[in-house]
Image 1 (cartoon, rainbow, N blue to C red):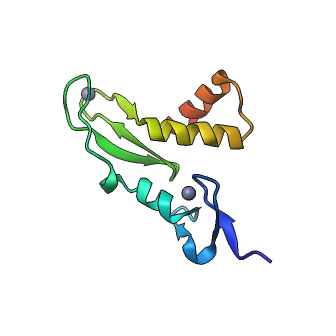
Image 2 (cartoon, helix red, strand yellow):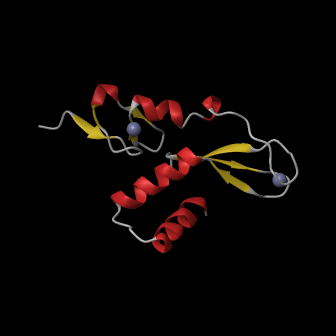
Image 3 (cartoon, rainbow, N blue to C red):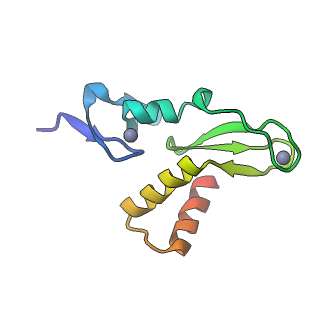
Length: 107
Ligand SMILES: [Zn+2]
Ligand SMILES: [Zn+2]
């Protein structure tokens, strides 16, 4: 009997009624739903040129800041942690492999 699913972002098992289903049909737990909502993130200025950066949700799991002016990107510590956990769940152990994962998320 399946009465739930693991959160795509943090891996926590949730009942279907607790999951928030994203447009991509992935489900996230209530906690992650709050975390991936760009409106809940503090605005960030580009360290390079002080332009306000644009929030971007990638693969429904990680929110990054992108600068329209110079094309620079910023990943929060929290978001990096999510990427690290994703890497672990996918059996990616080495730093090199993690870099590849990060690049695949950002590309
Ligand atoms: Zn979650
Ligand atoms: Zn910039």
